[in-house]
Image 1 (cartoon, one colour):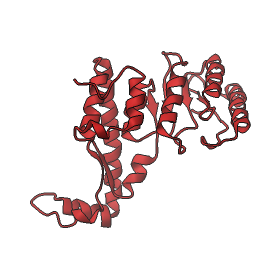
Image 2: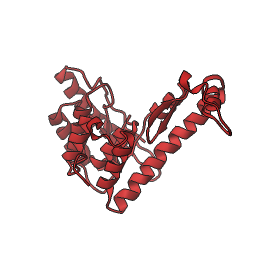
Image 3: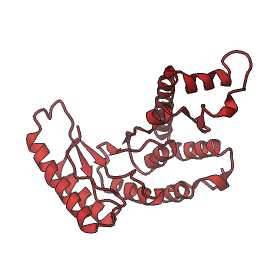
Image 4: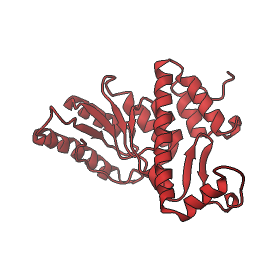
Length: 242
């Protein structure tokens, strides 16, 4: 269960308003804790605010940790900010949070964001993107997002279930959106299951290199600079020779 928080656009230039929202979120958490009727059955998560200002984020982390909620969320992101700024906020916050509590980054669902944020210390995520993009005929895969409504798939025939048939279902049938939704959610759950196994087996850096190499077909020049920089900051060099 999430606390009530004060959220404004993460890209807002209004520092005073951002500061006000951060302090109000702390005060509202106190009121949520008092009003919480079933702490033995429901885990209340605080939500760290502060926009892209790392000083505000540090202050909010300090105050939220004092409240000792069962879990801690990092909120107010995925609102159009640059990826490198996003990574700095996540890395800063996770570095200040206790190791024995789940860290939940809200509103994050792109596969690259998930695996990088995990390396930065995040544990949990949520996002509408995998289901929303399914409604537009997009399948999330380890090779990137495929638009199954693309006309180039329409004439791709053959035996069995062809790409042309999949194109028809995705473009013309309501069930196409349902099937793609299930596929996309399954893919992301499987991806995070692989990430978890890699962490347990102490091979997460190798997992990251394999993931990005497959996604960009072995062309390291195409690896996103924000991911390379963020991962290098936690000791993972995507560009280093294996």
